[in-house]
Length: 125
Image (cartoon, rainbow, N blue to C red; front, side):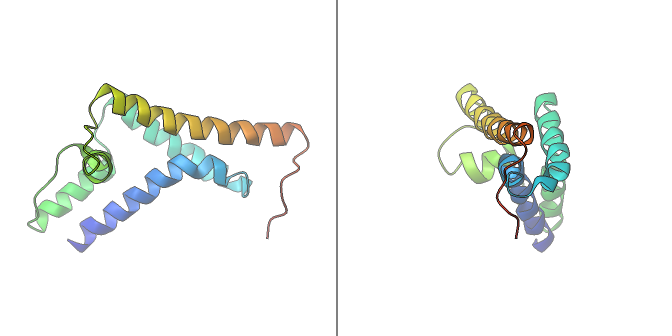
């Protein structure tokens, strides 16, 4: 069960990085090299309606450890389910994509503006 939990923590980190990576890149521009492929991979899996590879691995590890699998995917189980929201509902889907795309649009828009203006970013420690 320890490995399944480790995959769940990694999954949470990937989701958080996908959401905030563009904003973090305002401080550390090199993060774009990691964030852009991660965000595109997450977007591709979601838009294709394919099962998330991390969820698949986590569920297999849970079953191998004798724990029950869950339904609704990672976000449905760990985030939306406890809030009483159905991850499959249109409203939740629109909200989820709006937040993800909005944060990334703001981050990359600001990065582009900084690049065009000569890059007056704060000094990096």
